[in-house]
Length: 457
Image 1 (cartoon, rainbow, N blue to C red):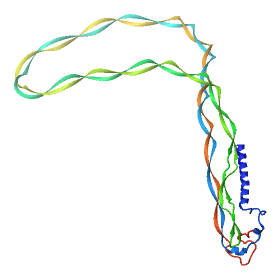
Image 2: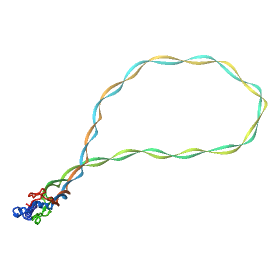
Image 3: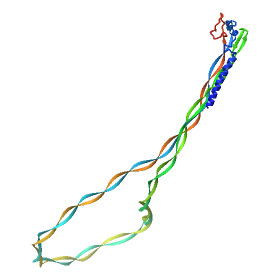
């Protein structure tokens, strides 16, 4: 790079020296007054007369043109990577435990006792005695007698005749039938089943794994960028020609041409990130969930349907018409007189005196003193201390670990080549024809005109 830089600088210097010499030689020494002859410096003819002659000159006009230049550069781009990292967290679990606590209570003990009490009572003694008593009773004596009695009766004599009559009788026939009716009944069946209950047990497992950590370093690189190419306008060497109107040699400048000139370059120092992965061995503790099972009994009650059939009686009534013939009795009555004899009973009562004896009871009461004994109950209360146990609940807190995943965002740098377009100004020169000295001078003048025409010096 340094060699190329010095080489381009030396080339530019040589070109400038050669251009200076070429210009000096092209103008026939016009750029240096030392080589100009004396006859060329003396005024030739009238300046105002030469000014009056129209001469076509060329004026250089500079236009700015913008060129698009594409540069290739490197830029650093960061890629975002999301990865899940396991994080061990703890949460507090509250449990209710029970501890046994002893306490003393006074328990009353009741006891029933008896005491003996002697007391005297008067006991009545009843005695039943009988005495004989005589009394007279009037006893009626009844006697039944009969007497004959004649009476006349009218005796009806009945005579029965029959006549036939036809009639219709609706006859109903009843029949008992049975139909089977099915209905569903339910009975309860109890069954003891066992279900497997799974519960999770966390067991810590320590593992070692190698992870790759993105590291690296910054390195400084030097890059040489060439300078921009500029357009330079160079005029070719002019020539001296004899002008018969002026009777002298007139200098005509050369043509202007465009030359591309390379400007000096520049050195760019930039830092480049060089990734360097580093392997590290880390210890990871994870909890493996183990599933344990236990059988828990439970009772299943279900209603089992069963079909019950029973016969329900029902009566079917059939009605039919039946023609019958019945004989209707017709009774005629006439009375016949008849004499009859009957015995009419009558009762005769006689009073007869009768002497009877009866025993009349009477009761005598005497009191006898008697000593008796009775037990009177009474209750005594004594207190006995008794030690009892009770369960007192208390709350304990323990930490339970669980693993969650946390999303970590990392940015990984990488170098990407990109192209940028920039606009570089470039000057383009072009010649525009102009007319020099359009008006003649009234008096001869030896000085240059206002419009810039020279006298030839």
